[in-house]
Length: 347
Image (cartoon, rainbow, N blue to C red):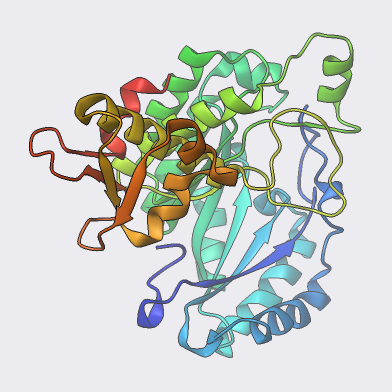
């Protein structure tokens, strides 16, 4: 569960507070966080948080978190960091939120910093691993290595905080084998949650220059969906909750190239159901009726009904089925598939 235990079975309220690029020691080849939002100054944090919570349904019944995103939170200059921590900590003490989280770089995590964050009310820390291949990290000008992520993850665990890992399929120098190794290495860290952000070429970045000269070719949408689906299944099977796939929409985001799609996460899950449906139809014939949990019907049907139009299957729903399962009606042997059954068919 993101950031703690949900109250009354409801999803948590996570209030994003963007500190775009603050604390970052340099600019990674793919990054321009300023296109997402301007940094929120510490004095504005209480207002941002209370306004956001006021707009949420049944917020008083839900677990509530402040989330500092978009920069390197643990790299923020000490006096400014203390102002952010003071503002957020006061909201915890007042009971307006239950805890705090942030995203940061793996090479800017220490036991001393984590103790400081915990005293302020932190419950979770996100590490921007991006890749676990040192060659890919160097080509992306990340300024850290895979071992930094391993060490930081251990420190986060030892501090008693929830661990979230971010990865970016399609970085310069990555191929399928490199990406599979990254996913396996991330799974070995046993994160509580993960985010999967396929690399897109953002205008004004160094990556755009490489793209314009032909030195970098971004993943096409189909390959980005496949790699993300592989990671989604591998991590989910390991007990990790995938919080998001694909960059969140932003009014100011300017994408020059790459697999950006406003419904990227849905495309990934729809691809999974397409593969599962095809497998069952190969077993039982094209006239088989597929059974699925009612809440999974949109993914089975597909984006703009692509799955059902291409494969021409009949379906109905059965809420006795677990989420993520697909069953062929009337088929006893090999009549049910789930996500873990299709990972070998993806990459």
